[in-house]
Image 1 (tube, rainbow, N blue to C red):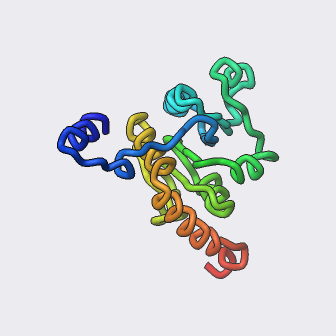
Image 2: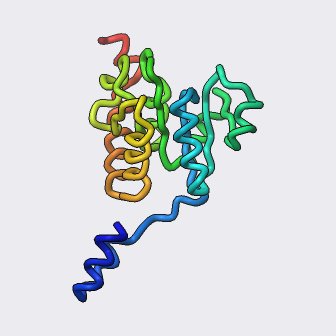
Length: 173
């Protein structure tokens, strides 16, 4: 945005709202699946001063400490989702998509890969990314964090979508 902002200023226009940024420092990013791509996303988020919390039962606590991220357990995942700015689920393989569903039910925006049953679970209530493209993940995450209307739309659609997944509905279907 810097070149565009400079051009506007040299033309005598002050478009502050158009070029205003959002502070990423101290925001919370939850990442489910902490493989190579998840670790790249976490490194970039940490560079902006974000607090990163990851859930991956196959990654050691030592590796999390090395990368300066917090490790979530299944037991504390709900509490972490309540305070997260977004959930990033960058799995290459996913079964049903419980993590994105849990996030949506808690009012947390979701950025996820289009794998397994996730598109059926999330519908239009998530931003979809290629899990092999860290820049695409970072761009989607940036949209959620810097564009309140995108975040609000994902939260609203997510709550509605998650409300349709009940045990009674599962038995009927």
